[in-house]
Image (cartoon, rainbow, N blue to C red; front, side, top):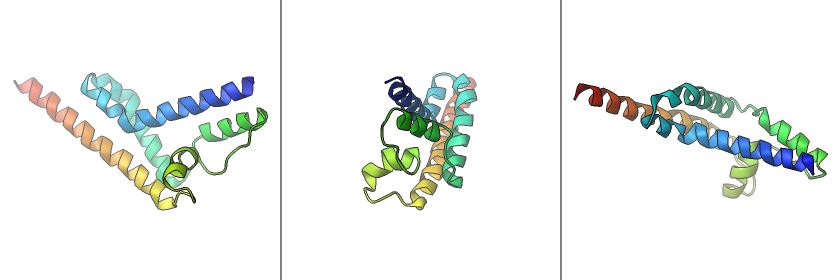
Amino acid sequence: MPYRLAADLVLTLHFLFAAFAVFGGLLSAFNLNWAWAHVPAVLWSSVVNLQGWTCPLTPIEKSLRTRAGQQGYSGGFIQHYIGRAVYPRGMPRRLELVAGVSILLGNIVVYAGVLAFAVGFQRS
């Protein structure tokens, strides 16, 4: 039971980190200090996806699930929890590349908007 709860906690933290990497730039519209935590998260998420690396949280969750007597899963976090819903037969590698580029470019657009707003606000 404790291993299952720990695995669920790691899963929750992993999901929250991924959501923060994708959408956290919007928090900078309210307070630019969020960028200090968000930009490294974006860079990490983008590099992990573009390089095809495994996030360190994935093997931790898998190990905890195995210790809890649950079946582990193959592949990574995105492939298992997100890709499986979209691609039931397996997520192609190109989708990981698209995810990495999308995270990076999407956040560049968000930060460009935030900075343009901040500069315009200071001028008025």
